[in-house]
Length: 60
Image (cartoon, rainbow, N blue to C red):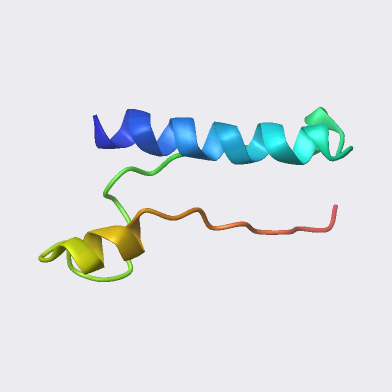
C-alpha cells in the first residue's frame, strides 16, 4: 500500500512536469514507500513530513 501510494505521488509530479513542457523521456519517477523516511513515523506530524517527493536533477 505505501509503495503504491508513493509511486502514485511520484507519477503525479512527473506528469505535472511534463505538462510544464519537460520532455517525458527526460524524467523518471520512483516511489519508495516507507523505505526512506526523513523522521520516525511515530506521530501524525512526522508522518506528514514523510509524505513527500524528492526531486533530483542530474546532468547527462
